[in-house]
Image 1 (spheres, rainbow, N blue to C red):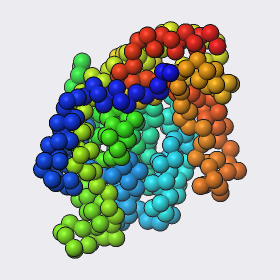
Image 2 (cartoon, one colour):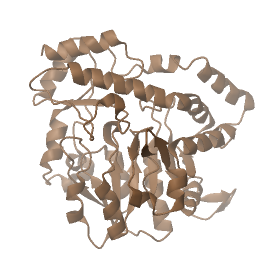
Image 3 (cartoon, rainbow, N blue to C red):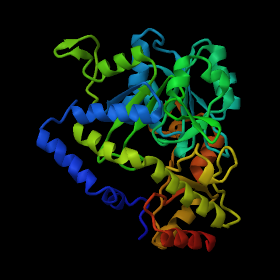
Image 4 (cartoon, rainbow, N blue to C red):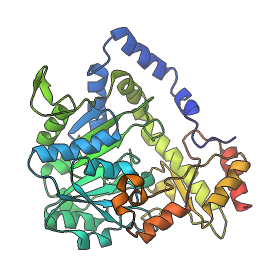
Length: 395
């Protein structure tokens, strides 16, 4: 059986460093809010290009704490609207509704599966306070029009960066010029282009370190990054029971903290993230060049460049589309190839949001009917990739 994702092999590729890091934590006997936590926050903030990083328990908490903090600051209130892609994992939307804000679903671009920015402005109302962009499957969603809309309507931009750690994209001169801090913290020079990492582009970003992510822990974990010091302070306080000082609670907070063992593991993995992402790009390009089936739609980079040189995509998932997806999925399973469906049911058709079940989102629904994720990782052997391609081409 070809595994969809061989987490054991990925973990083994970091040995003995991971075992040494865990042992270091055990010997210290300090498991919450210690040196590993602080060290990872500093290192991840520097990597992303953001002034603040707050380690939290998971990616959903990261997003919901961002909205909660803006409510505490008075920028948002119950009933305010947040534009969000209809084609996303449900966590993006749960973070909005949990804060009693109203998600406004917008269809995706059928090519990238990311938010179709050309449809956003018609959904903006006087109650719109923010746009959430989701860098789905690992591809950055940051069209120039997004920046213009944020400036025109004074909107916050939240990045759901759960799937795209390490992706980089060119940022406009106008966006960089909005403050010196953007220039200092967010932008990196490479090959005469001015690139910013996802997670540093918007006003705040949520990150997930679920084990299957490009930067994965050995359990749940997440983080918020932002250049807004006031926002960061409130998020940190909210995540610690609403307390800055022990037993003194300023807010009705929650308990959402990245533990020392997960932080130590992430510190081991972070220095290799760019190299691992590049290997994923190479596998993705090999798939693109060699899958040759008339009924399969292959993923594309938004800039139409080869995957190997498109830094805006880290290929957390390699997602193809086929009109008879379930039949293809069954066929590959019988061939000993494990695949996954990201995601079989769109959020607006879930029972959790039954008030939306009557809504028609034809592009989103087409994507959810047809998508199939193929195995991809930095450790998958080329003979397995070739076997997957051969099986698909013979379908």
